Image (tube, rainbow, N blue to C red; front, side):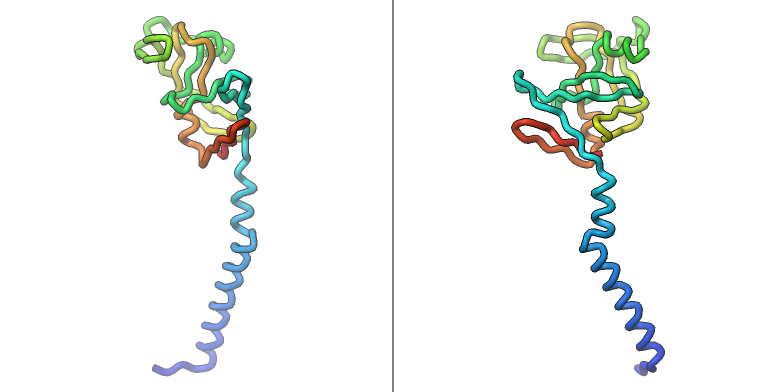
Length: 159
């Protein structure tokens, strides 16, 4: 195998370029840019022990209780109506088991759900007919985030 000086120069330049990129990434270049793009959002733990989030659903404000046990975002009929979502009577075709007992629900798709910038588009949700005192921020939203972590006072969400 024979290596001439021009090949050695090209190889040295390629190695130096690669090392420069690795150094830049390690010092916060690309990694820092990716972290800056993630907007942390918070749900606050209230006196009742639950985490509550002020969300924007399809651009409108809705207060939701964070519920990792709920497979979907669940809206009360009143919250859904405030968003302009009014399923027909025959749309309530799904049955849910809640702490208060079984309730009927209508499947819907929300254009977007955002909590302080952690936005998820095309979110599956349910509108309950009755029996739920407040809307729930469930896993159809939470499970599509890059991360969420809980502390004793707040829940941090990353989009």
